[in-house]
Length: 86
Image 1 (tube, rainbow, N blue to C red):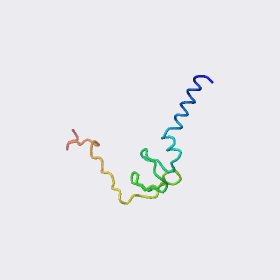
Image 2: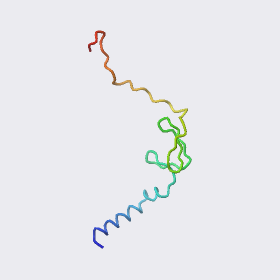
Image 3: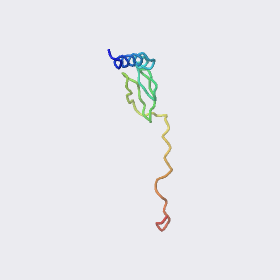
Image 4: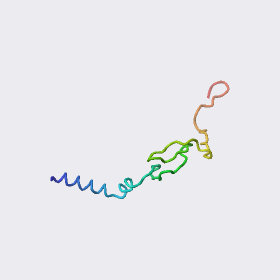
């Protein structure tokens, strides 16, 4: 076995034995914002009620209690004077 092959084998062993790899393999659930949520978890995401089913988020409907985002009032159209000039 060449030195390169030994290094690749060692790197692969380290990656597969890391806690993060073990967590991904052993966790049944869905990922949101870099966190794993168990099967059956329901939450609001951008106004949509979603549920973790078989490792994927499924849309269940709208979130009735989630407030709507406030409108963007900055920028936009230029307010022109009465004669059409700035």
